[in-house]
Image 1 (cartoon, rainbow, N blue to C red):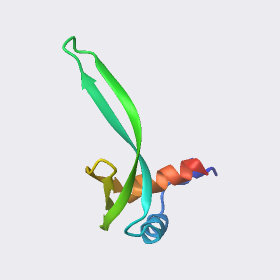
Image 2 (cartoon, rainbow, N blue to C red):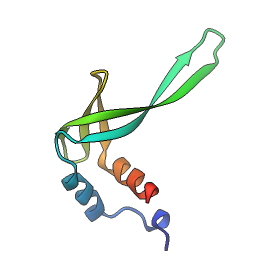
Image 3 (cartoon, rainbow, N blue to C red):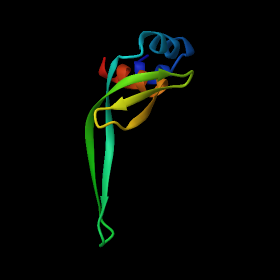
Length: 85
């Protein structure tokens, strides 16, 4: 059975949550969209690095390089790490 079809286990999410510590750097992808007057949109996938500033049961708070605070759900982080294997 491949990793994509196994599904996510609560233990896997807990393992990721326990591995990530406050102060760790995490790479994320943000979406930047510009809406023009002619109703077309221009989306850009921008890679950013965030620093973990707080941990909660379902997500972590990240402070990006530009000062913006964003969230990263543990499940999303786990899925991304599984796809990189």
